[in-house]
Image (tube, rainbow, N blue to C red; front, side, top):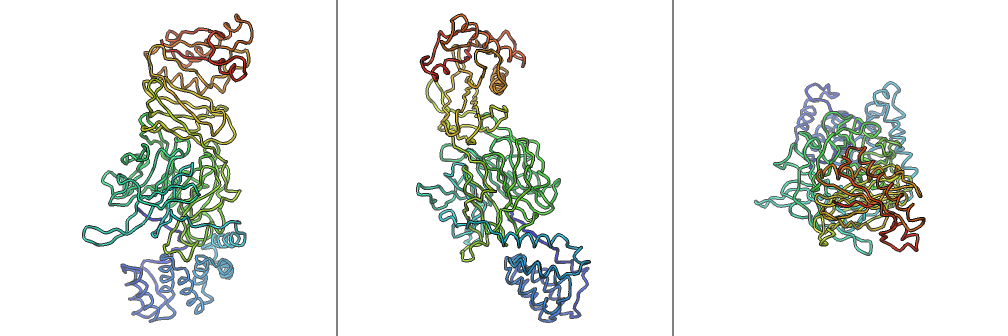
Length: 628
């Protein structure tokens, strides 16, 4: 697994063969050149320190040594190295520029601003965006968010933990863990594996442990994420013989408490380049990911690819393209996360102004996928002068989880998982959990089926997934407010529709086998009182019925209208027939042959509930489809 490529403010090295040195010491130059071929940070550091010892004014050696400390995360050593040459050359603009960067990376923002302001106007033109960056960091530091990150015990191990992912119901969290392993010869090396932890009733987490053996291999796996309903896990596998590139996106489908074997997502999600950080949009229709392929704005960009969920639950990607500005920049954006509300989007970046390294940002999309809020830094102390990444949020939108290497200086490891209470400006819409189950109405057997939830006010698809093959279960997350309908489909069965009266209600779909006499009520079909004109909020279910008939070309149906017992019998019979004919006409208009559809008005003669209550009368006012 390739690790994050952290932000480099300036290119501080030049090719040794073309460089003009500011020392006349041949011994110092030789040691400097040798450092460029050093195989380890320790060897490189020792060679550069020896070069400086040969000439205390050798600025390039100081610059390179400061860069070496920065790349190793030793920001205090970076500062002390630059302070030495700064004292020797206080009027050198290049030294000032590097000194300001060192202060910035060490979290000394006021010092960074002060030194930068002392640079000559002409030289500032070469790095005119840095002053704004340093002032932004200083402002964030002076105006902290009123909360404190807390290390997540149980989830965080004694190794490096990063790229947290959490199911929207908050029951399961997974991380990428960089842990030492031994090979067959007894030699130790570091390997990335996927670990998983489960929430306990007291709000704590079980100790993180490796996930199923069929997902982790002897190579690197990680950067995993769950779909909003927890049915899919996406992850990245490197050096796999099935890969298209060096690191490819894979997925597995949950079956009960286990996961299917990994499946390569394929092109165009994967290419010969590097792909990582996959995250499926809550609708199930798109997957966000990070890649260094051509066509973006910077080194690594966030892209998205459209996803088609097949009836067996497998996925088909198509139409990949970058998100573009204002999210992507000329530098690195990665680790995307779209909350279950379908609007609030978090990502890590070193291209947007922040506190140093990679910071976490939030932005928002509308239903058309357009950015409606410029990326906003989550602020200090969520972000630090180190690297923060892999931000995820629970379904309720109250708590966030992410990795940082700077929050706890006493941590035994470099990267741990932290939890925060989200500040109001970064909170998504609150979502409620609606459990569901699909089964065969004839025998009670659980079914794997395609599940779709749609917004009845706009007929826009809100969510799609498949139910669990082993138990028929699925999960839907919906906003507290809104009007939604659910459709469940599987080959060999009548499709099922249901109006979700409010988020949080259970959804039970009993699918009727397609045999003569099978009957289904067409839920989410709406008429005004005593009218036969179908309301626009019904268009989604009409489309579902159309697709059912289009797929099952040999099926003939009878549409039967029903009313409650209010009013005259003759009027009710006529109204029920007109409503059945309205549905037939809508289907014929879409292309279904009229010869395949009969209609009948049953009026109030076949109630399914007590007509003495409003609730009962509402259930009796219905339209049914019967297989002929």
